[in-house]
Structure formats: structure tokens, C-alpha cells
Image (cartoon, rainbow, N blue to C red; front, side, top):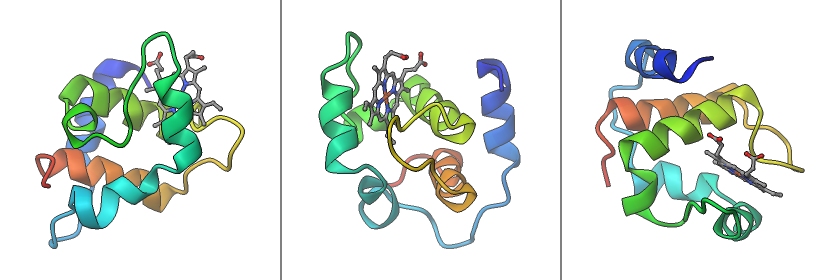
Amino acid sequence: MEKAKVETFVKALKCPTTPVTWTADIKNLFTPTDIAHMKMQAQPIDLSSYDEVSTRPTALAIYQAVSSGYMPRDEDRWTQAKCDTFGCWIQGGFKK
Ligand code: HEM
């Protein structure tokens, strides 16, 4: 999916009425391996940081990477349910 379409797609997701939160739902989606590898990249993303992951362009890039199966690397790809949870967190305004 092109970057421009990700935003539209996320807005259209059918999300649960109970809000998705960083603490309860999002932070544990990232494994210690994910966090370690993404800290070492030329353009690092700290996947353990609420402030970084909740920066809109970063969040959209993460959504695009996991929903396309591009990330995580060398691990099982995220299930549709995990991708939807992350997308609903974006849609819901990054609740902590
Ligand atoms: C859920 C876990 C992960 C997420 C959300 C994630 C997210 C991302 C994002 C958003 C990018 C930038 C892609 C772009 O828009 O161009 C990226 C790049 C990259 N990631 Fe990850 N990553 C994850 C796990 C990993 C793991 C486990 C590895 C290595 C084993 C890894 C290695 C890399 C590398 C080498 C790049 C930069 C070069 C490239 O794009 O190929 N990532 N990642």
C-alpha cells in the first residue's frame, strides 16, 4: 500500500469501542529483538518509546511495514489482528 493510502485505510478500520492503549495493547507487540534491531538502523526507531512510536509519520510507517509483512524481519509476520490493533491505536489518537 502506498504511504498516502495508509492514512485513509487506518481511518476506515472497524475498531473496538474500548480504546486501544499503549500500555495495555501496543508496547508488548514489540519484542526485545525488534527493539534492539530497530535501535541499530541508520534511521533508528525506538520501538520502546511511546513518544517516538506515537509520532504520526513514524506510526504510519510502522503500520505500513507490519501490515505489508516487510517488518519484523526474521520473525513471524504480524497477524491481521495485531495489525488492526496498531491501526486502531492510530485511529484512536495514540492513547497512553
Ligand atoms: C515489529 C517490529 C519492527 C517494526 C515495527 C519495524 C519498523 C521499521 C520501519 C518503519 C522501517 C523503515 C521502513 C521504511 O519506511 O523505509 C524499518 C527499517 C528497517 N528495519 Fe525494522 N522494524 C521491526 C523489526 C525489525 C527487525 C527484527 C529487524 C532486523 C532483524 C529490522 C531491521 C530493519 C532494517 C535493516 C531497516 C532499514 C533498511 C530497510 O528498510 O530495509 N527491523 N523498520
